[in-house]
Every structure is written in C-alpha cells, then in structure tokens.
Image (cartoon, rainbow, N blue to C red; front, side):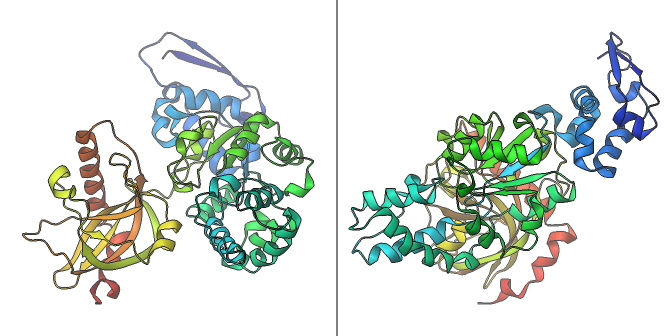
Length: 457
C-alpha cells in the first residue's frame, strides 16, 4: 500500500477529525500495508463516527471516510468496502410494492370491480399498471377491458374499495427493519409515491412509527408530472436540502427506476413482479427483496443483525402432507426434498420473497429435524410456479409421501439465484445446509425446536 502521513489538528480529537481538513499522502512502503496500522486512531475514528454521531454529521466527514474504506483492508469485511458503490447521504423510498405489499390488495379489488362488468382479472396485466399514477392505471384497465365507463367514473368506483382495504396492507419483509435502522442512525428519509398524498398518509397510518420516520412525504398530486418524470424525486431532494447525486432511491417499478435515474440519483430496484429482474438494467443495483439490501455498499451504516451468515426472522409457519415434487431432488441433485403443496398458501407465498430459509421440520411419526428450504421459481430449472422445497437435514431410509409435515421458518440465508452449472447449484445447496446446521445450534434458533406446532397433527 504505502506510507501515509497526515496533516490535521490532532487525530485523537473527534471534532478535529470531523471539521478539520485531513490530508493523506501515500508513498511506497510495503512494511505497513494497511492504513490503520500507519495511523493509530483510524479504527476508533470510524467507530465513533458511525456510533456516536448523527449520520448527517458523519456525512460531512466522508472525505476521510472515503479514504478509509477504500484503503483500509481490515475494515473491508465489516463495511463491505470491496463492493462500495457510491456514498449517499439520504434515502428516498417508494411506497406501494416497495414498502407495502399492495399488489394482492390491488388484485382483489380489481377482481371485485371487474366482475360487476362481467370481466375477470387474472393478474396478467399487472405490469401495465405497476408504478403508474392512479389515473394512468385506471385508464389502462378501462381500455384493456373495454369497460363502458370513463376513466374518471372508474376511479370513482374503485377508490372507496381501495380505502376500505388500506388497513389490511402488510409491510413487505424487511421494510420495518430498514426504516427503523435508517431512523436510528439519523439517515434522512423521504417517501415519494405516485399516489395522492392523502392516500399515502392513510396507508402508512396503520404502521407504527412510519410517518415520523420520514422528513418529507410527497404525493403524485404535489408535482406537475408523476413518475417516470424525475419531478417527484427532485422535489424530495430539494425539501431534504440534498444534492440529487447524494440521494439513494429504492423502487420496485420501472417508472420509478426511470424517474430516479432521470433525477441523476443512485437507484436500487426491488422488482415486485416475479421473473422481471432482467428488465431493470437502468438501476444501479437490483435486489430480490429488502432483506438483501446492504446499506454499506452505499456508504450508509451497515445492518448488524446478521448472525453467522443468517438473518433472524419473526417465525412463520406452514404445513401439510408431503407430496411428490419434480423428481429432481434425489435423482438430479442427490438432495431429497420433502415438497409441500402450495394450495391454500398463495397469500403466504406472495408475502414472503423467494430465497433460501431455514428452521425446524416436524414429521408426525418421526420427530423434529433441522431443515433448510427454498421458496421461489428455482431459476436453474425455470419453474413455472412458485414452490416450497424443504430439505430435511437428516438421512431417512424410506420415503414418507403423505405424511404430515410441519415447518417453522426462523431465519433467512440468501436470495434465490441462478447458477452456471448443475455442480455449482449442488455445491451452493450443500453450503446452505451447512449454514443452517450450524445456526440452528444457536439458542436464538434452537428454542423453536420445542414449539408445540411441530408435534401437532
């Protein structure tokens, strides 16, 4: 790396580190390859900045932080500096489909209203209304279904149906965690949605602490043009007193991603429609769900709740008779899975993002075992429907089709992914199994082994 020299008013004084210009000169010196070894106090400086100051104040010091994260190898694991993309100072979030699971509500309401016209909503046109303004979405439905009413009339009919359902909208996995994390670290946040502001405030009123988390809330009725125009995001940046280049946008829709990039902001896409990630090439990063967001990639404080490669979750439960799957678990992968029918679990599957989870499995006549499972479309095999494929981490001597299987899911390992070869897929599955085996020994997870649900039939 080289030798570093510093000119400042004292490296051990936190205020000096923040407000005094620090000049670092690097020269060739292989004996001391890491910056922290050359400059005592740099580790405590970054720790103090992250833990002892508001993030807005820490952002003022990011010139020294830039050098630290780029040059200081011992910090790379904690701060994920190898994949640092760009430092940002605030976060602007979309609402519907990003923080709130509104897709199911929208589908149910459209089914009810379209049935009055003798039409059937099956969700295939969902992409035509995703991320659009209410007027644009209504116009698309009226046109596609050739309804005998105007767009304004359709809006007047559907609005009361939506209002009755706002209280039933659940937060998407990872939403509460993200908002709490950013708020606790003093990261300024704005909420920017194409929905009218009154509708936005009605929706978030059912989620404790959400309204107070946002410094700014902007509705589509407050700007001249909604997404994909950048107007809304530029207005949010102005109200936050931030430069657009210092803003990170988190969006689920293509119009939202387009708007964020047009505003010259950094954009993380979290596609709300399945198998659509390939369409989001304009985004700076595409993630499967908010569970997979790594704030440190953007210079924001990292989450500190991962435990041995796993993310603890509020437990959720699923069960039913073991059914025959695709016949590839034992034959193709050498990994026998105890598949469950998805019938009756459509809402649960829609609620939880695809990925690899783990927990405990109870078989009615055999006992309780560790398990790891995938939920999703298994991109390597290109499933046509979302499936649940548990792998019970125990070698059985016989099949047990038809036997009652109860699962408690207690943690998350990684998002669903495709693989270049069958061998790499198999290796990853075994790695997931090893992670689950080890994690389930921790008291954090092992206590669920005694849950009565696993032994009921």
